[in-house]
Length: 387
Image (cartoon, rainbow, N blue to C red; front, side, top):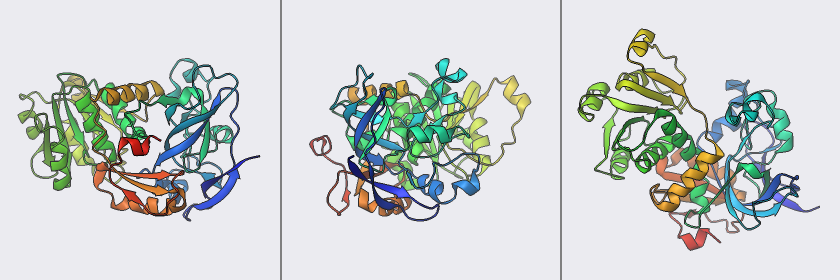
């Protein structure tokens, strides 16, 4: 039996420990991935410190557990029934797992499977514990086992560090698709300087939105977002203007075609309501941030103006592959991210670093193959991250 190093959580609220565990053996339809980069997502600290208290209905894997939601790496072994994925391929691991044989899964809708589970993160129901028994390894280890149908193949132009940001990028991309954003449309993004929000802005630009209206608190970061495309992006700091008035000023008086709410729990509901009130007739609001306050919605008004309010959670493998192709074509610009890369031995330092990130532009990454104890900051060259 071969062994690897893994960062495991032994007790909620305590630091990760570096343990030696067995390298998993892939099943017939699985592949083994050598992990080159795993994103340290902003919400992970909440998950490993407060999740059982906050959301007891969203189960964690049995402890000690290997966390790590967004991983990218190289295929090193394939199962006996894997026909097309090849050893040596560069891939992103979409961590969404499902039963495969539920009504939703068989209907091509795995994200709505009652057993849907994030490998290396948390689950959405009691059956998630069975999924964790099959796939117990998140991205904070040297190797992970994952189903072959959960992979997004990466072009050489996308680095592993960029690819491990696909979770947040894909969540935003799927929301934009649900909202109907396409060439010639306008979209309002609340929380547009955060991790989800920057991803929404980048994808909206890539999808051809001709007006991207961004709201947030931090004026410095808002200006940086505006500079992504000064022709198409307009920004507003919270409190500077009445939101509906500002939106209609930039949309020929109509209102926005779509509204993406990317702010998380703790944000006031008033801003979300103002975003809904900024939609044109027939517009769509999609929530991806999970703002926790209840919304006082006028259902009669929503009915009369045919306004849709939609919740969206995660993204499909197919949507991830479309993003990879947009990045390869250059329409989805991933060069804006600033990568802070930590070795596996410094996973706790990486988790702390997320708290001081530069909004959604900072990408905190754990690289299990990194030997040096020194943190590497800044944008890597492509040759440095593709080996």
